[in-house]
Image (tube, rainbow, N blue to C red; front, side, top):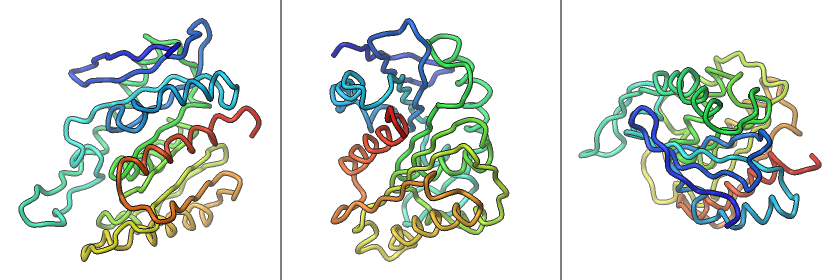
Amino acid sequence: MNGTFLYDEFNGRQLDIYLPQDTSIDVPAVFVQDGSSLFRTHLLEIERMIEAKTISPIIIVGIHPFNRLDEYTPWKASSLRSGFPDFKGEAQTYVSFLANDLLPYIKREYPLQETCHEHSHVGASLGGLFAIYTLFMHPDLFKNIASISGSFWYQDFLPFAKQQNIQCVDHFIYLSVGSEEGKGKTSAQQHMPLFNKQLHDLLLQKGMQERQLQYHIEQGEGHHLKQFQKNFLSALKWFYQRER
């Protein structure tokens, strides 16, 4: 690998960071929830895309959660299964940490573009729910949002989304879901593909253009890490292709 993969820590939180080979110029950053699980095993492929000029050089910042069931959820809600903890709904506190603490730290310590015009935010499952929540609550933080198998089954999230008045003139949103997600479930999770489609349609209703949205159904796939990683790479290609 020609670039650098390193570990950092900020306010007690582990950060997994990839830096491209050339750090003499400021580049966009991709902020990823759940640490480096979506990209750690695909760094060589990402480097090949950069070297082939398929995508622009990027920094990737994988942010480890303290507790994803709490930090990625927008308000308190009961667990879907008995014996599991309820969701504490601490997303607003967490997004404030991203905006007011983590982003300034990364900009200060790494060769990052000063503006947010090309920065991205990516999450899968509950992380994907949080990525879209961040879009609604702080649309100025990131230009590109990727929600991979976003948990839009979360209690009252789609009604909440319908009530939001957002300006997404310059944003690009990548949504993906496996066609088999939710199969065999009896909870709201059984409607994963439907809820992702409803979120896509809602964004169009709020004024986004088709060119700003990439909606992908991963045929034959369920809710698992390999599918998330594949769509992470697809989102990078779409966000940072040299010629959009």
